[in-house]
Each structure stands twice: as structure tokens, then as C-alpha cells.
Image (cartoon, rainbow, N blue to C red; front, side, top):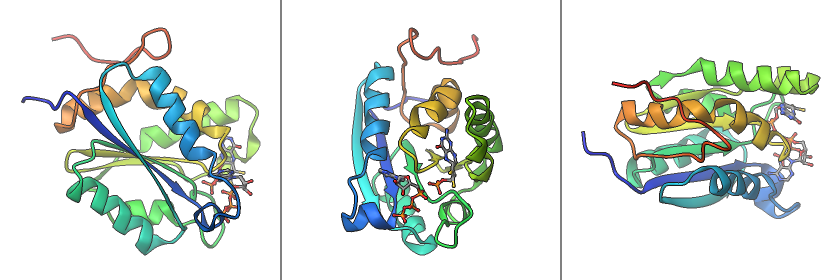
Length: 180
Ligand SMILES: Nc1ncnc2c1ncn2[C@@H]1O[C@H](COP(=O)(O)OP(=O)(O)OP(=O)(O)O)[C@@H](O)[C@H]1O
Ligand SMILES: Nc1nc2c(c(=O)[nH]1)N[C@H]1C(S)=C(S)[C@@H](COP(=O)(O)O)O[C@H]1N2
């Protein structure tokens, strides 16, 4: 399978208030800065800010995966238990396969850092076609913790689903790719 050599990555901030401009989105920029530090292969990164809500989030994820051929979508926000937190429900309506290990590992890393409220986050990941979608909590400080915890598995996952190729800086993240 020939992989696209420039991976398309979308970062989606899900927040009612950030989408209304009531506060400045710091999660999207934090995720982009993390990617630019860690990913060494060519990437196109697009950022989006949308309100909470199942239908709108699902429509955005579908459009990015299908319409725009995005290889990797990082979503930040709306994973908690509050009534408007419906990002996991939106994801569930869009993906074909869930990868629960991503959420388990992100929660484990956050709890190990001494963030007891990490147990409230319903983080997970899933695949639609050749697109991997990963849900992160909304707190900007959580972005690096959670990406550090799971990103080693991302390049090989993209290989397996026929998405674009990603290489990482081994000084930051050593990508897990079985030899052979
Ligand atoms: N994208 C973001 N940029 C900056 N700060 C954020 C962002 N998301 C969350 N926060 C901060 O974390 C706090 C709690 O996060 P939480 O996910 O509960 O946001 P929220 O208050 O539900 O956002 P909203 O109501 O706008 O959807 C927020 O009040 C805000 O201070
Ligand atoms: N690493 C880390 N994980 C975290 C947090 C955090 O500050 N750091 N906040 C928690 C809180 S307070 C909530 S309510 C859930 C869900 O947040 P979300 O609704 O913004 O996605 O993520 C949790 N996970």
C-alpha cells in the first residue's frame, strides 16, 4: 500500500465558550505546538473551533474524515460528564471501530500525574475508514500529558488503516512499529 507522505491532521476544539469568543482557545494551539515539536515528517495541520453538541461535532468529524481526507483528528473538549459534554457520543456515531486502549492509557497517565478528576473524562479513540480520531480533555494542560501517553501507537495505527505516514522525533516519542 502506498502511503501519502504528507499527513493531514485536524485539531478540533469543542467548547461553547471558546467558539463564542468568550475565552481564547488555548487547547488547539497547545495540540498544534505539541505536534510541531514531535512529528518530523511533513504534515498539514488545520485547526477548528466548534460548540459542544452531538450533531455538530459528528458532522464536523464526518466532513473532516470523508470530505477532506484527514488522516488524524485530535479533538479537545466535551469528554466530561456535564450535560453539554457529548463528544464521545458524537464520536460513537461516526466511527466504525473503537480503540479503548487510548482512553485507558490517557486516564492512567493523568491519574499518575496526580489529577484525580481524570476519572471524569470519557476519553477514547476510534477509526472511520482511513482516519484515526483521538479525544482529549478540554483543559489545555491535559494535552501534552495525554498525547505523551498514547502517541507512540499513532504512526503504526495510521499504517494499518492506510492513512498518511508519520515519523516522530525519537528524543520525544519513539514510535512503535513492529519490524518485518
Ligand atoms: N479550549 C480551551 N481553551 C482554554 N481554556 C479551556 C479550554 N477548554 C477548557 N478550558 C478551561 O478549562 C475549564 C474547564 O473546562 P471545561 O471542559 O469544563 O470547559 P467548559 O467550561 O465546559 O467550556 P464550555 O462551557 O465553553 O464548553 C474552562 O472553564 C476553561 O477555563
Ligand atoms: N491530564 C488531565 N486530564 C484531565 C483534566 C486535567 O486537568 N488534566 N481535567 C479533568 C476534568 S476536570 C474533566 S471534567 C474531564 C473532562 O474534561 P472535558 O469535558 O473538558 O473534556 O477531563 C479530566 N481530565
